[in-house]
Length: 570
Image (cartoon, rainbow, N blue to C red; front, side):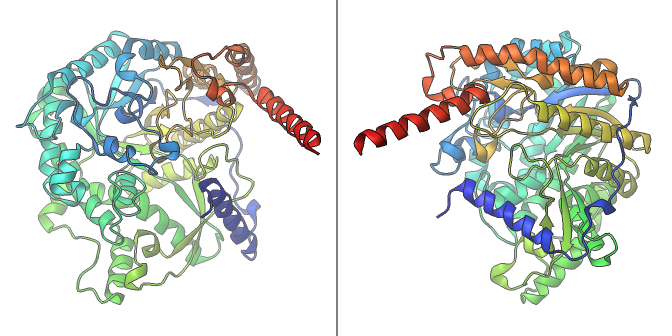
């Protein structure tokens, strides 16, 4: 069996070959525009984010119950290098330290999630409310507000209480709707006097597909062809119920807003003159973002999902579609349950039509779409194998949301780029370029009339990256995970992002280039100090701490030493 890294390389090579084989494909057909210098609207909110399981640590402290990620990450072979989030950034103990970092960045808001099992260890309010968990989030929220940083709170960022998974099957069971509403209502009751921005779910696409279809994420189930659709169906209902609970019981006195954060990759047709490719590209977006956004804004699933999954279900000999249906009453209840739409966006794909077989054994979410995803081999890919830097796709996605859903209020709830290298570099120029170009495309979208109110850099800190463990880093701040104190070090991107926030945009080419130069100069001394650190507590990690030049030198010295040994043997 090939190692994961080799499989990833093969995957990229296959995509490149597919792109190369596409006849009459011209990369220059797509005009993506030049850089736009200007400012964001007054009052635009700048922030950064993280989530409970990824950053808090303290997985079994102060009465917290087990989550599905606690259990999943402890199973050997599920996570890269068998990492877990048991300690992660130790954010549970570093509230004041991390808020000082936010102040240094001059953030307007911080997006974090509340751990359901930290408040309700079994997931059920009538069993037990953990007051120490309440106190922790009280402390975090109060300290944010004292420092004039607005809390944006996610209620579900994937850490379902394990008891609910074991007793009911998690999101496969309709009972989760009421249990989640009970948990959300507790949060509104205890924190709603201070929290005015609530996100019900973060990226439910990943919860459904990776949790219940592919099994890559907790709880690790592989219910192909049905699991993802059933989980999504219950999540949409749970979102709507929580929105109505807030609307009827809390909105009048608390004056807050309730939204949802959906992930959306842009799909661009391989051939913009080919109608089948155009339809496949829209289908790609509808099966991803539209799967959740269309019911919430229009009351039902996208027609293309109903058509394709329904037809393939018939071809399989099934009596009904594998895509569940909403009753007329449910459609009316779900429609309009969104005060703002959170958009998490990282990358783009080229899309072409591809007919997939519809046999019972081959049916799944991915084959239901009848499309192939391709990448341009020239797109930068510094980190996660799925994440290529394609800034122009961001503007197109935001305009798609404007057109499809009546130009709702949008908060960009996650946007950023990872790094994956043996030697971590604090002078992250590629991240500076990514943020500069993606934020600029967002500014262009606002000039197009898209109603974007805020932006959240993902993420504030390096943290646990789900099935990739600590092998990938999205943070503005580097975290030394092998040091028990989990010290944070600013990367160059901290200074660059801080300048964008201070100016509320981009003044001119000369000034922005000056920002980049100064940011890299600032980080260089820190890089050298980090490389010179004796690292006595974690010498085995030296290759991940020092700068690339030191890594390169080490590799060369090792090779020379190996050659010397071989010669002596001969």
